[in-house]
Image 1 (tube, helix red, strand yellow):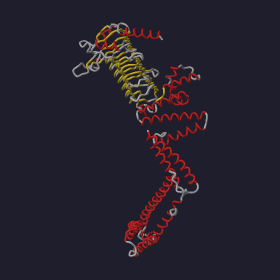
Image 2 (tube, one colour; image 1 turned 180 degrees about the vertical axis):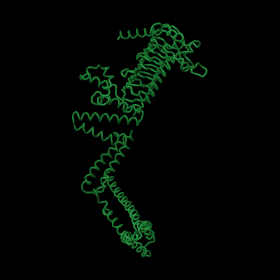
Image 3 (cartoon, helix red, strand yellow; image 1 turned 60 degrees about the horizontal axis):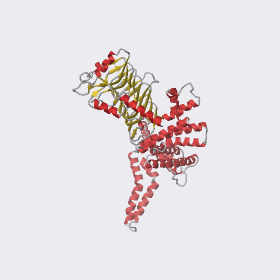
Image 4 (tube, one colour; image 1 turned 120 degrees about the vertical axis):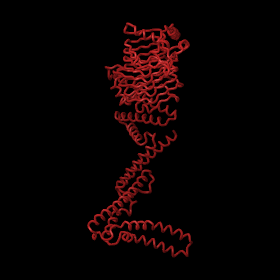
Length: 606
């Protein structure tokens, strides 16, 4: 233990000593002049500070204001040499409007080691860029801030075109460094789909990876560890395979990941969730895979002797292996499946902690979808009743209520079942329709009589309803003759009863009278009148048939609702096959209403 402490102490002294070396000073004009005059294909510079000189550096820096120098695109510089800088720092000030290196085309690789401050804007990196340092002591940064008025500890890449891999690795877990990392508005493009961009940040002030666009196919590895403020915002990753990892255990940091777009699944690993973090599930819904699960899957392939020709790294970046994992491997290999469920469970708990039921429900659905696939696989591998029941009940719950997260879906599915059985019941007679079985024949008989006789349709209707009419009149006459022997309120009560009882008869008679088109026997009509009469009466019959069918459907629907809700009226008003269907529907209704109640209560409690 003492040896380890001694080594750390010596390392910290050496690191501080290397940072506090006396730095050679150059203006930006002198810096670019040295690059121009360098005879070698590689320009190297070590232990230097590139400061801002207002008299000589207007070509290389400018103030972003109406009165300051405005850089023109025709002034773009092209540098053909490879650039290698070590412990070189640049003076700039984003708040005062002074911009750093900009509109420069780098034809070869740019390497920046142990630099605490540089801004590159609207540059082109045709062979990529490397930025690497292990952090800086606060004393070192403070000394530069005190000495140079336009110095800020920021590494800033903005609106650049990066055509080969970016490798950015800043900071170390042992030492906090008040450096800000800004990778914003850049366009990343790779010609080789096996290449990758790598961004790793550790123990720094803040990290901003915002509004970048990734073009083509490749890999993007983003590892964030202990950054006081982190923003991964509105990046278009498109078809890139993304490996996103948050390793910090602290809960005080502000963490924002939202409005990013992904065309394919991405690997995610988050050590610790905190209620002040922001992860918008909508940006990667249905596309999250566990980094630990994928790791377990690759180790399974290696341990079982599959794909022996490939090493771990080759397997990790293989498209076919990755596709196999996201399609089937994530639920076939038990360890991988457990890690996938663990990650989804963490997200679910996180959204519940934030009282975000919408995202929590979406995550829960994905959680149960994966579980359903797992039990489907287990049943096919080793059929058991438990695996079969869990598999099928999950499938039912998914369709019926999205695994209990959507009670309204339960109502919609229940209505489908009710209407389906109602249409089946329409095909069979039931005891609720007594008196209506021969309604269609009676209507045809009525219109046949109408065609054959001289009387109008109203008279024929009144003739058929004579018995009912007599009962109405008998009631009226009886009550009228008894008015001296009974209380007055009985007469008052009898009048509306008589009126409403005979109302249907009177209204129907009036309608028939005003729509009587025949006026005599059909056989006595001229040919043209026969055609018109046939059409008119045919429409009447069609309307009446529709009314009968509608009433029949209402009866069937009422029966279906009664059966589904298991109310029951003492007996099933059907015989034969429909009786057994009603029993089945009753069981389905009981089961579905139970699930609906549980889902509704669950959502209310949540």
